[in-house]
Length: 261
View 1: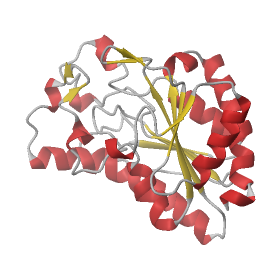
View 2: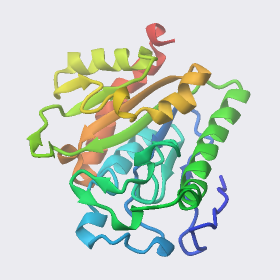
View 3: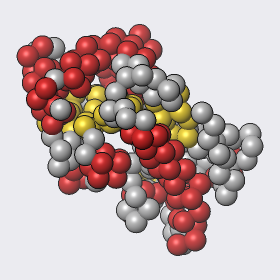
């Protein structure tokens, strides 16, 4: 599937803002990874950050893409992933959200995002967010038009310690107004007893993290869930593959359960 190149802030060498893998996969799930990468396009430079911060959690969700790729393969699902850092633009936030282009993340200032005017913010949204949103929406629309079921599964990771506070939760199962798929998955994960699992943790809808679900799934009545995985559990490719296989084993029956239909 080809994705058009937004040229406001991207060069041909940068490539497109969004990647789509296996768009014609036959499963009902559609996997999304909004914070898949920490790369910055050349025209944004380094945003005034040293290399260690440009590859830290403030820039992306470490391990999330590997898990998303494994889930997509196991569920025979398409994967839609952002190709640039959330410091350029957070594709899980609408343009009007102040943290769509964060001037400060956790305890770190982002100099290259400070004091942007409306035109500069609009250019970021046009380059990163709108192509991502249109690509995802178009893929969903085509699958629905073909009479296929679609269930949206977004994949994220979070840090073991936030603002000095350890987090005991290992997997968060998040939802917004529609809790059908989340309930089924929570029940299966709780029965397995393998991880510390919680609903709407370490973040919830009140934190603005369910934007993609609200924007793409809720208006269409699609099954949906957001997965948050503590990133120390998925620090290596092998751990990501293992997590993806384990989660897919619980997601697959949850997607087809009569109670979730």
